Length: 545
Image: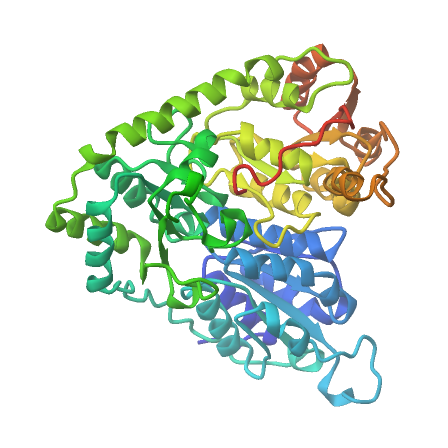
């Protein structure tokens, strides 16, 4: 094997072997050899305007393609600027490798530019955080670790003088690990619970998608006639309109269930910390927690049963166990029918507000109009608080893998990085960023990145001039609010046009639909900036997004 020109070549060659096609970065001298390696290896370099967007783009790449994402950050502030992105990847279980620059070892301790020991800073939010000594071998370790269940981010930095130095090329040995087999006794116990239940609910989370188990999950739900509530990237596994999809009856389902099986998502605040049932004096529901790795099983409460393993194998094996246990889906028919009716009633009850002609604009009208123009394969991205809570309730994906939100870490500012990645990963699909006006302040300069790299994205900004998740609760608690006001009707659309995109301000509900159509037809990054009613308190955590 030919020697590498430098350690940067070796590091990037291994990244290519793991399927990485794009390096997300913001230019910095500490990492020049990694750029040089990308040029040699034919890897696309996509440079952004803030390091957080580089990491968010790498994370969204991992979540959309189910391949590892790569971000390269220069030393010191370049890395600290990316920490929120790494933390988001940690909470979302996204396989991301972040490569960082590092002051030269030959000058270490003497006060070199941006000298900082980064790994201890990143250690709490990564699977592994370390300084490389052998570029090729250590980068392979980084990718293997990031991809192993439970997936997550890995950080590795490189001394600047090492990165510029000659290094041997490393032949990556890509290994496909054997699927982790779940415990058959645990699955048999879960099947017995299903045989005893009358009101079961199946929750499908993001890891079902990330573990490539969406078909097995859908087959399992359909075979055993289980009502389904998805969250995160579990949305779309059962498409909009599926008779077992009861998202809009979520409250009834969770309060009246006698058995809740949660697969591929934590029992966190989005799911009431794992407490279900108990309505009108009824007993609490029995809870089953299933994850792709034992490390992800709940410890803050005691599920009646749990299992860990490859999620496709879990669903296949659990179906076999249900056969053996004599599970009879007919027992669930009244329950499923009741939930379906409740969901249908909720959807029917939305019609007036989805078509509301009120002035100021009711935010639900935005989703009424958006639903008319979204394609089945549209990628919808949420970056905001109240406004994205509406999106979670009224945008129902028709295919899996087409929904992105910040996840349980709840970090604002993900939207532009996610949009960059979505346009690259799904070049023929609509990409729609639903952006709160508060969230717009975190990353809107990266519209410049969309423009420079010719990445058309439609941005819909819900502009109510407030921090809604804070203003309304603070008024309720104290009778007043502070630090919760933004400037009404700020022209975020003009920021987009100034950066080379397109946009317009919409103040009339009848103009929403035509503006959306202009945006999709424009072929450039385009913002539809919609002035909405600040007096409306948006729904919160109603869909578990």
